[in-house]
Structure formats: C-alpha cells, structure tokens
Length: 101
Image 1: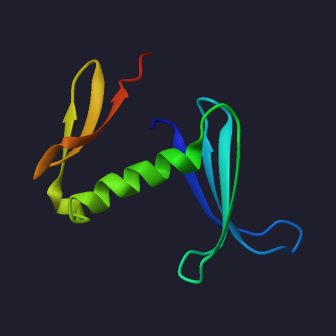
Image 2: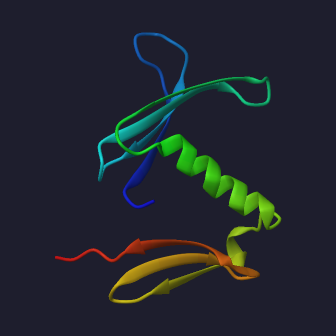
C-alpha cells in the first residue's frame, strides 16, 4: 500500500498513546491503542481504505513465510513499478506504481 505513514505513540488531550497509520493517497487512517500482548487492543479506522486491515494482511503474509529479516527482502524498481518481495517466497510481494512527475 503506497503512501502509508506510521506515527507512533501519539497522546491526544492526555489520553492513552496510540499509533496512527495514515494513508495520504486516500485520506484514510487507523488509530491503534492498547497492547496486543495484553489482549487489550483498540482499533479505529476511517476513510475509504481499511488501513489496519491491509497492515494485518501484510503482517500475516510476512509471518506465513517465517518472519524473514530485512536481508531476506529484495527490491525491484522499473519505470512502471517498485516491488518489495521476500527472496525465499517471491509470491509474497508488495507492488506500488512508480511516481510520475
């Protein structure tokens, strides 16, 4: 998913800290607070793209191939696309159109 930014640990008006995922291309967001380890995770999403759902799918794909380290990833750049893939499982990849202009 292109245009995704993470802003970790933001507290608004003294409330508990949340991690914010912002998708600039669509104006969508996800705010995640709590701890998955404690089973107390709260997720709010807004906008046309289900940002947290897409992040969870990507994490699931990564875990399914053994949670490879950064050296196990490859990058392919063409005039049309930028692709990040897992070397040992090339069917696990994330493709983004190249920026124009």
